[in-house]
Image (tube, rainbow, N blue to C red; front, side, top):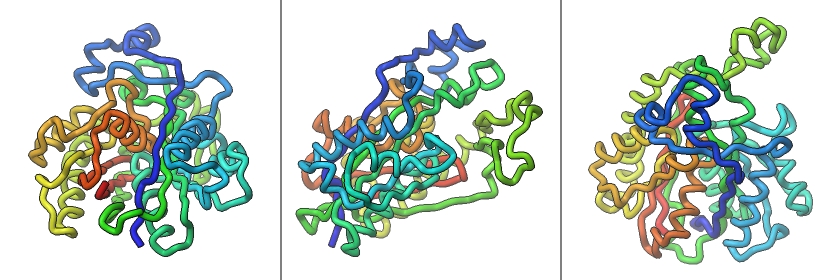
Length: 330
């Protein structure tokens, strides 16, 4: 049995934050941000809105898109690096918001690669017949954890809030669906993109000194991330294509993780893919980590960018380092 994406949806909060808005908060400029990232604006939540709230809105749209109701969902996979609380995870909060009977809810922490790691799990559940309708959600609230100061601008200008969701179930056609998902990690680089605290390895997990030093904010070695991303992403696409005896020319649409427009342009050039076969929306949403791929997918479907029989390729790279690819015969 092959699994397929039966429906998708996304939700971003209505509050738009432009580069010009950030100029008023710390030393930066619209030109500086666009040159380095390609980002023009992003979305931020209002007070009292959490990650599960965004995931709930995206889930309702994905479930409706699949022609289902919330009660038809058998299992939830929730990918996020910004859960509503330290524990429990956001998956159980989503189950409650959907008002469905008690079912399993699995939270995964694979940052920017979270959606594809989640897709690999959903795919196996469906292939083995364990579950028939798996709700896979990627959702993030970054804005409440960003450092709005010049010292943190390299990270702050990149991230936005949002959620995307898909329903994964048995493919109606044995020739269509998820062909494969390839996952990788290289933990020796974990300090190149991380948040140091709070952390259980520290005693106490956080203190005033850490707060004063800003060690509870995300830190990134941008050059290292860029260098590894433009190498690993083409590699993992070729890995997947080779498995199925396919070529880059066979790809109908490539959806890249939206971390940096320059990274995606380098990757497309390395693969030899024309611009019309690569989808980007980072200009409008920034980096929404685990939410980026399902947001992009939903927009592509709304724009008619995919038709039956097309070969869809997903690719991602993020903190950990982790990276992954997936091929889907639409």
